[in-house]
Amino acid sequence: MGETRVNIRHLLEDIRDSYPFPTEEAIITELIANALDSDAGRIAFSTDSAKCEFTVVDDGTGMSSSELEGYHDIAATAKVRGKGIGFAGVGAKLALLICGAVITETRKRDFHRATRWWSEDTYRAPWKYIEVPGLVGTRGTAVCLKIDDRDSSLLNGSCVKQTIERYFYPILDQAFDQVLQALYPRGIEFLVNGELVRRQSADGRGEIKYFPVILGRRGKTIGVGYIAKTENELEEDQRGIAVSTF
Picture 1 (cartoon, rainbow, N blue to C red):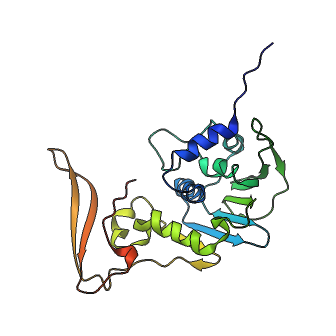
Picture 2 (picture 1 turned 90 degrees about the vertical axis):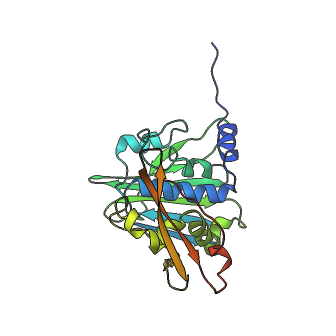
């Protein structure tokens, strides 16, 4: 009798190659996206170069028993089509390419469990339930990556902070607070190694012109933007044009 075998590593490498930036940045952005999808208001990162550990903890809704099991299925997603910005919980899955193990703890109402997931070979990525490490508070999900490479940018707090600022700038920009209030009524806080990631204010930007983004002949407003003009030299990361979609 024959057997269909899936090259899990090749599948994950194909997913990784679809991102136009490094694997570490893809992992961070996807972990944040999934935290935001779970209605998290606080997303805390910690790096431990001595233990080669990278950890992210959110205070979102957490996962149920069936969702936690599906989370370990490379091809599965608990997401509803058209809703949410995380891609199939792929952040932890991509981590299997560069980690010795992925520890996940989740808490949703009376369900509180933890798992250890690792890549055994090209075709196998087993997981098992483990004792809860106690990373999560009253609700939410924590992911701890056991990094293989001591030089990984995931172990550098400054690199983690820069990735957050680069890919989630609108959440950090106070100019977008009003429009994002409907999406994130609790507000969003990012922490890296216990320090709050600084939010951007309009002070010092000079003259700012806000405008609606309108689509089609009916003039439906689908977004908001602004143009800033200043006589003072801006910091490099504040120059240029940026477009962000939800």
